[in-house]
Amino acid sequence: MDFDTEVVTDISVMDNGKVVFAPDVIATIAGLAATEVEGVSGLAGTVIEGISGIFTKKNLTKGVHVEVGQEEAAVDLSINVKYGFRIQEVCTNVQREVKNAIETMTALRVVEVNVIVQSVTFEDQKSDKKKDKPELEARVK
Image (cartoon, rainbow, N blue to C red; front, side):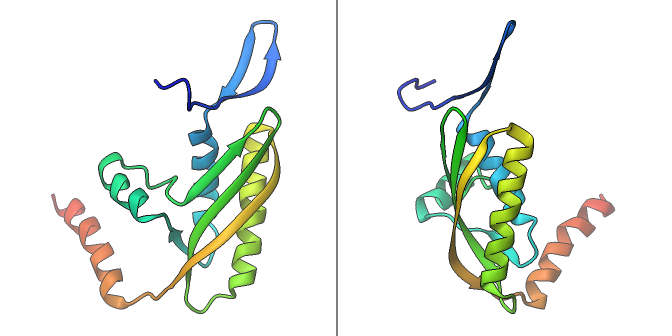
């Protein structure tokens, strides 16, 4: 464990201890909340995040950067938006849902949620069929 780069947040101090969140916890909450918003096709990370995600399975925090203080958090999210959706509306919904999820689950106050639209994605029937295929294979086995 590298203590020089680790950031922890003291949420509350009680007689019997304190509650601490690692930044990856906040990033995971933000990533999950963002991908649940209609019109978001996924999180978009850098090339390095994409390559490291293959090896570490860190897809839930890909494209998510958080800064966490003792009582506040700020989030930067890079997303892909599905073609045909109003981008401004999708981004506003992402901001609201991410803020709500973090504040509800951690009691941190979210001071800002910055949304960066990395690309617009197009859904085609071929990719939908590929998504269904592993599910069918799993049921057959």
